Image: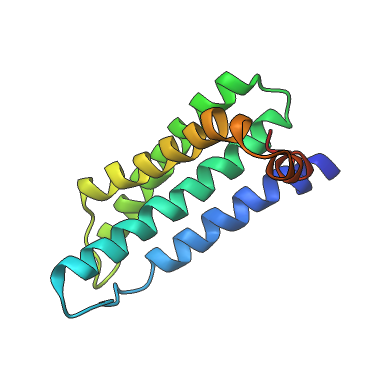
Length: 136
């Protein structure tokens, strides 16, 4: 039970946060169209990158092999992003965009890429931090 709370509760909390933000009308972040676009798409990449990392962490600590956990976390994150866009179809002031699903998937892929390729090459201090968080 402790393992479930430690590793899966953050996933549930993060997906809840994403859901709650998606249930609100879209705020305009800038009057300049390209700035608004960059801010919103960066938010997609970051929020779904975090979700992918949390899923990866939960999966590897549930005895799923690392490579499979990476693949599953990308797939599950992309599926959640797709369901989130569908949810926005029913939210006043929001509209679903297929393009956003691609940004969500990119965030998931980037997160797992950084875990697999970048993390092993970082300083011992960062690797120690990742081990404490049970990521690597």
